[in-house]
Structure formats: C-alpha cells, structure tokens
Image (cartoon, rainbow, N blue to C red):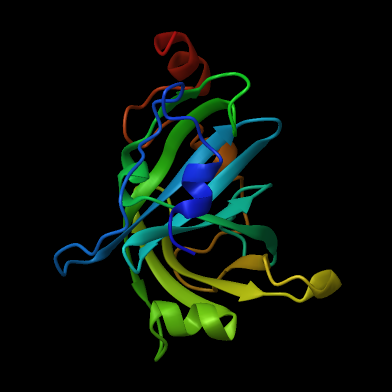
Length: 190
C-alpha cells in the first residue's frame, strides 16, 4: 500500500502523528505494536513491521488469549514505522480523532514457511509474538466476506500462552510503554 493513503487522511499541521517515511531498517527482529484507540469507537490496532511500513489491522474487540475466540481484524492503510512510538491524542475533527495508547509492543517472527509478504498475499499469516502482554502464536486469516478482502480473523493459537480464563484487555488496561491509562493520556496531552 505504501504511505500515500495514510498521509492523505491526515493534516500534519493539526495532528502530532508522525508523517514518516517508508523505509527498510537494519536486519533485526521485526517489531509489532498494538494501539488501543478510543476514536468514534474503542478498538485496538495491530501493526506489524513489514516491507518498510507497519501493516495495520483494526481489531474492534481487541486481541484475545482464547483460541476459541475469533476476532475480526479489518486491514487498514499502512502506517509509517515511526507510528510505533505514537501515544497521545489525535485532535477533534481529524481522521481517527481520539486517544491512542501503546497497549502492547514487542517483536515478532513469522511462523512456518511463509514470509510476511507471501503470507499476506495468500491470506494467511502466522506470527509468534514476543510482547509485554501478548506472547505466542497468532494467525491472521483473510475472509472473503461480501467480496471484500480487507476483512481478516485474528486467532490465538493453542500454545502455552493461550488462556480461556479472564480477559487480557480488562486485566491489562494500561499502556505497555508509559503505564498510563487512557484518561491519563488524554489529560496529559491537553
């Protein structure tokens, strides 16, 4: 996708979101971030570093540790790598207006024999997350609901990090980066 759509949707004279550049970085483990985003509706954004950008999915109900819970993940525009560090408030009347938290972050590896881009093209991407809150295997599977290919499912794999008890979103509501709550981020950014 590149960053054209990302930049078209934002007025960088009004928002502190990074304009960013699509670029490769030195070979290290790929990074991921999950933003908790209180826009028109509270949701979570899964972002995987790939091909010099953050490939991004909006996950309305957020990730789960329970393999039985399949979560809708809608692929959205690519974001710049610098967005991995964004935690703050997008001003009212701007695209995505609301509070953004770095809910989880870490590194990931593609599982199995598919590279990230090949898995995306085939509509199945398996990753092993090594984050502050989420660990272990997850799979993203593209659906063809209503003929669209932007809808995916995010599913936790059955491994030692899986759990059927409790809700990680309620158990770990604060920022992995700053330990702030959504209200504290909103207040401190005013």
